[in-house]
Length: 449
Image (cartoon, rainbow, N blue to C red; front, side, top):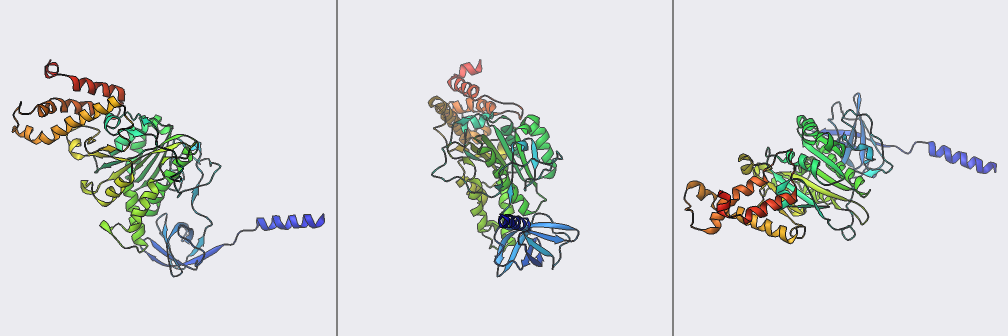
């Protein structure tokens, strides 16, 4: 019995001893890239490194390995770092412990509170920030249609439970306001909002003015502003999906809003180029186009019995070119795309959604037969008017020359008026379909009256 007690005491002593600590030395700092020697055989891609700098400690991540030298990028500015600094290898990959108490809070890319609301309670499960999506052969199918409260979407590009939709727009055409409308009104249990590479001054404006108290109460907001290191901006996108997965696994309907995927791609471009990757299309290295599907595929339906992540991802198109590399890649991954154009915004119609260029890949199944008939008839009228719009404005079209064009000239402005709404105006899809049906059935004399 004494021997058993002695062995138990020895085992307890061993468990209390610190684990083996592996460390290396900083041998070079090239811009944001930190080179560390001495971790050969221990450091892996994605490993965390803690470097002792002057009067502070810098956290970094291994992004490349080259002949025994680990290439690391920091989560903060490497001020005070010098060659010879001790670099300690941390155990394991980055994880977070989200809980339901995170609702109504703002966190950074590592899941740390930034809203001054005190410490965040930790959940029971340590969840990896970078996770794999559910197996394609096992996950559930896309569910029923979601009421978003935005007329142009509910009619022409409907969103379904577990669908992933892209919002493609240039700068300053109202995509952030559209996101706030969706965060407030979309039929979901929880909203997880990732503000990736945002302007610092816009964060509080979005949370307080656009999202509001009611929207924030059911949301978690992840923020990485444009002045933060590329690694932190990339982490914020992964953390947004990790928090969404936490709520999905509880069987909840999660709305994941990310603004924007383009800035995630730009952050990955900085990381790839700093690690020595060759630039490809428009300077984007190959890893950008490998990371995009790994990020976006995490949204969608969960396994049977789980909830779903309905994803809305904004794409900031470069120079209003909707065929630039990131936009083209994202469009091929997602389940539909909504195009927001400057031309419509300049006319004063918001949300400035171009319904003729937008598509939802859940159509036509998510609409009923009557709804699809109304949608197609309205699209035909808008398309006809779009083809003849310049001629009408120039006075080159003579009324009565073509019945379809005459009908389009009469009805298109009224359809456009139905799609116009303020950021505080919520629409009912049934009312919009009824109004469209009445409009399509009206006769010229009735409209004139």
